[in-house]
Image (cartoon, rainbow, N blue to C red; front, side, top):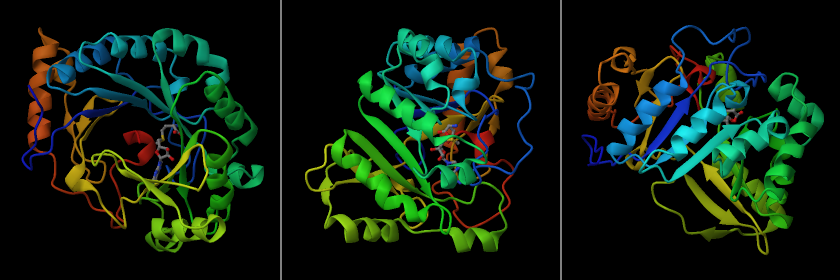
Length: 325
Ligand code: SAM
């Protein structure tokens, strides 16, 4: 059985946010002062297990744990193990800021983790610290080197480009894909942090501009064929071991190919990142047969996945930290 929405999109990819807490405070992700502890009602390992069973029975096959910062959650290894053991799930990944990866990598690998996306918005320590409000780029770089050593291929690096803050870093970041099998993906800044609209507009950098800057330095990029459902268009610098991807949700929306659904850490299904629509499915987790109830909830939410989201600056009910990117 497949999870097909009203527009014929087959939903295969799940993002599960397991905590609203983060040890970094990236300016593009949320205003300060949001994170506390995981409130009552935050998804448990049992919830994740049931949800994955239901989702996999409906053909969802790829799972990515996110947050907040998923590595701050003690139960992450159990959750990874639950995903890896779910029949039908063929890809289990984590999106992380990398800061706790060295400390926790062994238990994550033992649980079945085979892939990580690490956020890296700058190599310059000051720029990195300004963007993350205090983060240490050396720790993140150490995590990236460890992920390469552990052969967690492909190691993808996510960089959100913010004009006047880290746009001067894009050439250095792109260069990382030359000598190592690193896959650097430049993401357009989405207005998901409730920043003042004028500031957002001033700081938004279209992916085409980022690409032009990179091509100015390295020459024309060669396109690498990708799965059409992937949000990234992927390219290679001549002779590069890795690749460069552009994820342009604002200037080149890819809603028609969107195959994703999100479960937020407070047990809501969010069918589209860029609309506020959410379905509270807490009662389904408490049902006598949670897997059957969650299957129904998934079918209900998938049937209401909006055709497209809005990238216009707007005050969101939830900022990215609380959605799970
Ligand atoms: N803490 C983890 C991390 O840093 O990767 C996982 C959560 S974070 C919300 C997931 C991804 O969302 C990161 O790659 C981050 O750069 C991206 N992200 C957050 N806010 C964004 C925004 N306003 N526009 C585009 N991407 C954003």
